[in-house]
Length: 226
Figure (tube, rainbow, N blue to C red):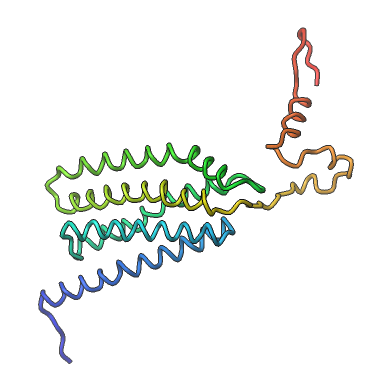
């Protein structure tokens, strides 16, 4: 039997495997993200919007790196593998905030809720990450410099894509109904029907809030009354 033992052969073989693994990892990430989003949101429309936005982040970041003269090598493959995990964060967070309101709510109100709840956190995370990557650009280690570049471009494209593209799609064509399963406490499942009628079904409804305030303890003239 004959074996290839030259250093050049093993180097090119390693780079080839890393190149193939980088694209396989992208496909695996998109598939897993799609399954998780579909299982939680239970909406094919929102899943398609999320996957399209994540794919846009991956393609746009890769295009920027290619335009800067990057070629797939050992360090670049590691950086691209890290890019895959970062590119889906913002979209998943906004999608989760979009689906929080239960029942039938207009897509405009859901989009506004997602932007107000998760928008500041996403912008703050993007700003701090970009600031950290700018600091790493002044190091003398090549891996840190390339990692800083890919991290900075990923944060920029992910922020713009999630806030502009994803929220625009949800505002215009997003689903309006998300029904969550109701969890019943086993300790109260055998209570009388009259007790069940007096118990509020949702802690967020005005009736529930009024009942909680009515049943609360109030202090009057040193006496505690219910």
